[in-house]
Image (spheres, rainbow, N blue to C red):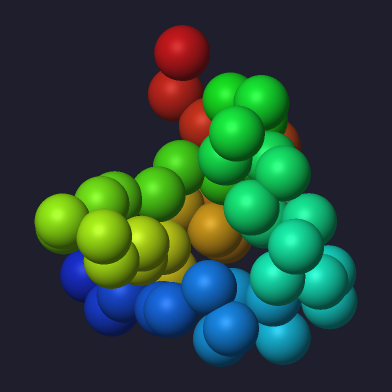
Length: 58
């Protein structure tokens, strides 16, 4: 499992969506999984790939 974490800016480039879209998804409880450490938001690369492939575990 890849434990590399991306910032929202890196994630937006990876997914080809705006950072604001990621913010909206988090607010609505949609989109890929993310982790918060205080005010920092990070996305695990393996979670992004699973989300893109539609292979999120239930």
